[in-house]
Length: 173
Image (cartoon, rainbow, N blue to C red; front, side, top):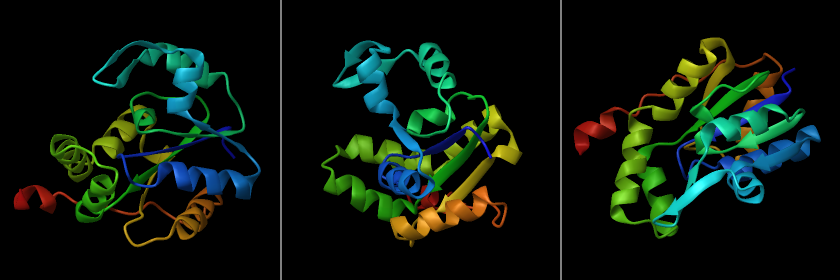
């Protein structure tokens, strides 16, 4: 078993909810990276309400942690030691509805939908961790509890990664 379980994916895929449920099942601590960044002041400034994270410092601090579940869209951007990565994926039309409910701007919604359709988090995670440590789960039609069950199957070696391709969404745009 890995010391770190990384839950990443586009905004709105269910990372926070699923990480919390998984932590309860595995009796592990969950670290919400956005809260961690604020608490440890691992950012240089705030631009348009968003923290500009000091990525190297964040990586260093997260690598000190063991037996944790980490969740953030940022976690695909660098490699953490002794980690397995679960990338949550969601059909863009479902993601769009979730982001609208959060009152995201049209530009922010489009940016996140394009990132999802382009497999951004998956590609970055594979670049940083390699194929053997990155698993995609299409959560489009899964409850959070069902997604946790699928993650547990991956952790026990009983399930492979989903093959997710939402690139067709780009043709609609």
